[in-house]
Length: 256
Image (tube, rainbow, N blue to C red; front, side, top):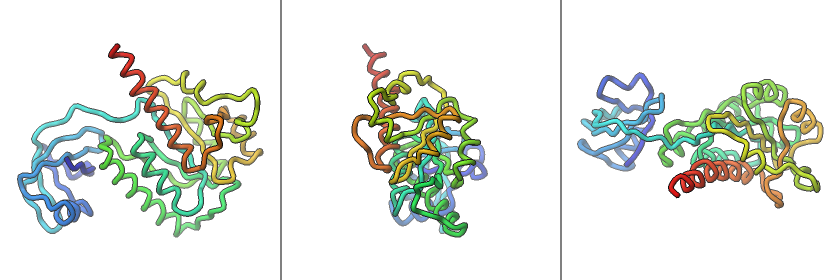
């Protein structure tokens, strides 16, 4: 069943009005008709099964049939800080990261980021990322759309990090040492409901000076297995492992 995220002002008691680009999607792409069922997500995370009443050129009107008692959000709030990569890699990270349950994304202007965005390009990119996150949330039946925060400098990130319970960064040099700190050790200590901040460097990795500042700010350097992952792979590795550990593995243990 197709899912749409509807702004709070478009909810009226037991009716929901869909506007914007979703009207075109309903009318022209999936070609729905009055009587068809859809799922509408409220910004508070609740979702309702709705029946389309009428379709106009600028709005789709529907009525609530029943409310759904379900949530598919990760039990850990994971924010991905991504050093700006080249090309459209960040599009992929946001799309797949949303499918895997990320709570938010923070683009980072890291020391080794080749990419430099001016104000005009930054605004355009942020709008594009928000659209990608919304579409990926609908596709994966999320209850929330991940927040796309403004691109930060390294200093701004350090200040932002004070609001998180656990902070880690993937560090290539950690994987080369004999006595490394494994990501798995951090994963085992995480508790449901905690806020985790994950920093992934750009293609060139995290500079040594940045690594030292992160350690001073209580970030844990970790290795993500014995292999060196591409920047667009690392965040997905983190999210997939959290999903397995807290959703699949623990669910299976409860069934035994």
